[in-house]
Image 1 (tube, one colour):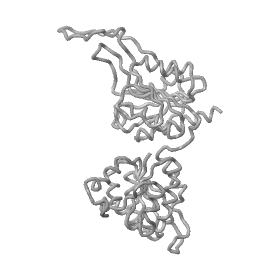
Image 2 (cartoon, helix red, strand yellow):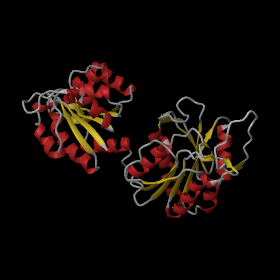
Image 3 (cartoon, helix red, strand yellow):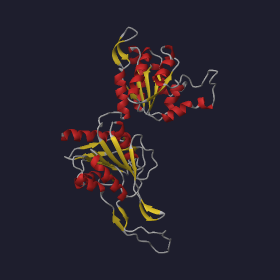
Image 4 (cartoon, helix red, strand yellow):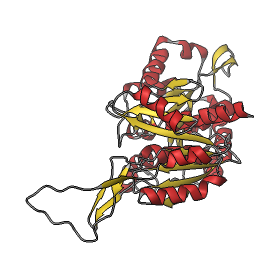
Length: 402
């Protein structure tokens, strides 16, 4: 995973070098971006030596060896598209104000506006500057836009004053980064099987039955589990999604193929998460040649596909079993019924008619139904955040069973 680390002009800039090392320990690729003010406190060479990468210090190359060109002119867009997080530490009052008001007059401020990755800032400044209404207004505006703020610590400051304004501890910032990116290690030693995407059931050589699932929820679950230290098996129906790095990807097409692969691999898993939208029906016999159009109606004889979740529920042993329920009505009743009928430990249910919770969206709105009657309703959030909340509940169940 890639992080852009913005370093701005404050005395705490030297701590960014230690922070860079700490982030690298989490196997994060760190691209440092420095403001002109930051260069008054620490040299770019320090970060270049730590990261092995060019340190970005300006919007345009100005040296004779690397004159300004088209690539340098759009470099901020390239960086914005390839990072998983923009972290600014230390963040001065100046940079907070520029971010809050959309000012883009250097590389870092332009990068902030250009990226769609999560943004985290760790302010550091004089206590009076931190407490000034203008600074607090900037922080409030950024929080309202979803920017994650690591509040400064209190203590003795470089200016000789005492109070809030000292850069949060490097370990605190690193932990917040890991939490945001799902880089926890609480699934180490576990094998997690995730199913994702739709299945396809042939009608004839050119047509098939399927559904609207994009696979995004399942792939988010696989990535989240892998980041948290699990060995992940991803059994996936046809999707256009990129397979998360480090995941054991098992492509399938039909419900029967998915069943075979899942039942083969499930015995080696401590957690099985069935998030795939498996076709409920298939043709009793697919036509060997293309069906031709005729004037009359066409009747297709369908039969049920294998109920993979129910079969797993009967044979899962000590593994935690998670199922999904995409509903259009009576969400809670249908989910609770499915929880009991399939012998699952968790059913993740959503109303696909809700905006932000349907198929092929980047967000979801779900309620988790657990055995014993416990429920957890989640607000609209990214599917990756939903994935981590599901995994948190899996861990809770495992701890209870010990």
